[in-house]
Amino acid sequence: MSNRKRSLGRDVFDKTSERKESGALKKILEGKRFKETAAAKEVEVQIKLTPSNIKQLDAIRAQLEKNGKGRFTRNDLIRVAITLLSAEDF
Image (cartoon, rainbow, N blue to C red; front, side):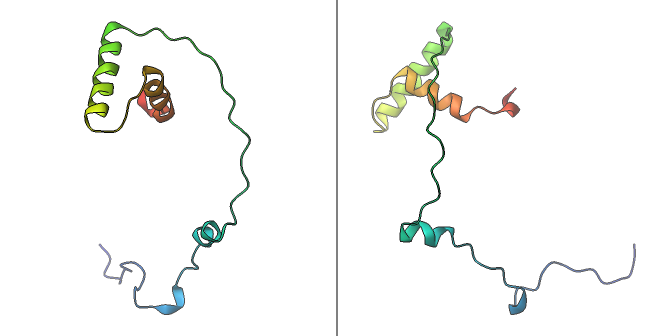
């Protein structure tokens, strides 16, 4: 191992190296929003659920309703699952 001094990171008390703050929050608060993206297109799909999938969806629906989150349909829960799905899940 070398006896050279190593930097332990940036100096928190050094005022010259402060980062410029992002103006995104300020723009949102002032009403200057970012350009809206193109409207989402809906695509109809058909899926087949196994009985265990249906039981799991119904259990989640019951738990959400019990916790006061409102009533959700199976379609709503499937949409949420698709939204959260990523390539790393496989």
